[in-house]
Amino acid sequence: MARITDAQLMTHVRKLGDEHPPIRMESVDFTVNDPHRMRTTFAGVLDYLARVELEVDRNVLELLTIMPNASAVDRAFYHDVWWDQEIAHGKILDELKRRIHLPEAEPLLEVGYAVKALGALARFEPIQDVARCIYYFTGASTERQAVLAYNSFAQKLTQVGESAVRETIINPIKRQEPGHFAFYRLSAEKLMADEVLKPWQLFLARTVRARSYELVGTHNDPRYQAQMGEVVTRLGFDEHLHEYAKEIGRLEAKLLWAGRQGLDFPPYVLKALRESVDAYRERGAFAGTV
Figure 1 (cartoon, rainbow, N blue to C red):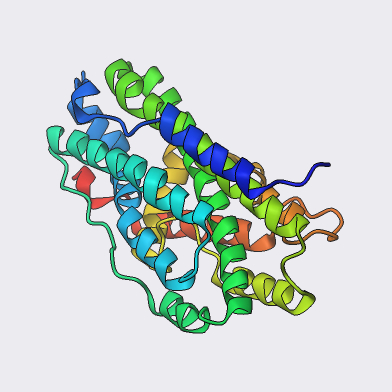
Figure 2 (figure 1 turned 180 degrees about the horizontal axis):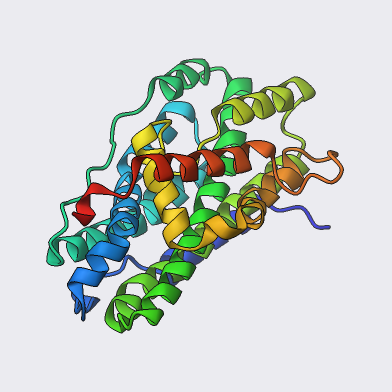
C-alpha cells in the first residue's frame, strides 16, 4: 500500500475548504411545522449538537496547548477549514433553538486540567508525538459520532415531516462531517505507517487513551454524560450499542490496538456509551424540554 504523504493530506484539506465553505445563515430555512413536538422530542439533541459544535473554540485552544509545534497540515486543517465550518454549524443550530423557544447553548470553553498537564509535557517532542496520536484518534472518534448523529437525525426529521430543517440545516452539516473524519483517519494511518512512535510512546498513547477516553462533549461530567445518553437514545443507537461502539471505535482498534485479535472496538468505547445511557435513564431528559 502506498504511503500517505503530507502533500496528499494538504490537498485533502484544501479540497475541503474549496468544496465545503461554511454554511451561510441566510441560506437556511428555519421553518418548523410543529415547534412543540420539536421541543419535546429533540430539545436535548439540538442543545447537545449546538453546544458541541460551538465548543470548537475550546478544541482549538486544546490543540494549541498539546501541539505547540503543530505541522503545517494540522494548522491548515483546524485554522483554515475546520473552525469556520464548525462554528457556523453551532451558530445555525443555536439560532434554530432560539426560534423554537429553547435556551441558548452554553458551550464549555475552558481548557481542562488534564489537557494543560499534557501540554506542559508536550514541549518535549516525543511527548508531543504521543499527543498528536491521541488527537488524531480523538478527532476520528468525534467526527464518526457526528456523522452517525446527523444521519440519524435527518431520518428522524423525515419521519416527523420537518423537511426545511432537514434539507437546509442537517443535510448541509452532515455533508461536511465525513471530510473531517477522513482527515483524522488519513493522519492516523500516516502516523502509524511512518512508525513515528517508538514502543514506549505507543504504550503511553494506549494507556492515556484508555484512561481518558470520553464521548464527545461529555467532559467527564454526569450532566453532559446524561445528555449524550439522551442523544444516543433519541436517535435510536441505544438498541444497538455494540454496533454503535464498533462504528466509533473501529479505526483505533485497527491502528492503535493493532495485533489484538478479535478486537472490533476498544472496551472503553462501549463502557462510555453504557455509562451515558445509564446516566440519562437516571437523570432524565434535558431541562429545555420543560
